[in-house]
Length: 228
Image 1: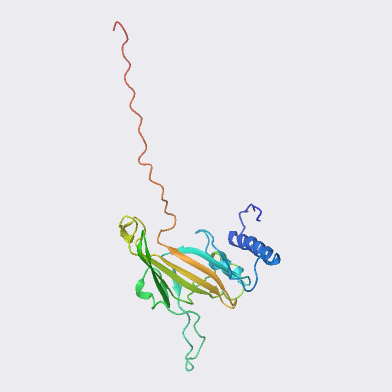
Image 2: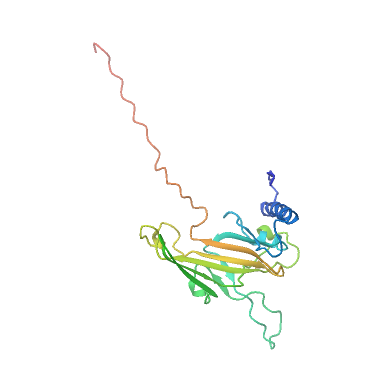
């Protein structure tokens, strides 16, 4: 359903990906494969994409994006209600929600627990209407006008233990707890962005180290041959 696209040095990978996704979704809508009564289409890009930007580009379509974000990301809480006695511009952002700092987490809006065979009790917690604070960098460098507020729901998954009764923080990975999130594009009227936070640091390879380079054996001295 998609044609391969050769990227140039100046191409925006996220914008091209969003354009391809839009083509596929519009074909599904035209073919009657999705109706307004159906659940939103779930799109799950790999960990290389920051799903905030595609959520903004696809906000007019019936889609949700589910992706991974780093466990050291900092989101912002909703802006507090404006004080009628306050003079000046109302704030756009609330307090910080640092995924790596539980002291900044408010009480979750939703909590579920599920017993599992290999991980013990799995606890899932989520909080609504959080958003990253965009800046005029990277994909938003050439954005015209005010930067959008893309809200969503962070979802944090905590397991009791890893297979083999290993502690989750002693698995050789980042010790910060895993988390996850689901975000919406303001004004779109539908949930358009979701993200799960991995506790594996980016740029970390799971391949075993090949070890130090091998040294060749020193050459043996020549023998004198017969009769020496």
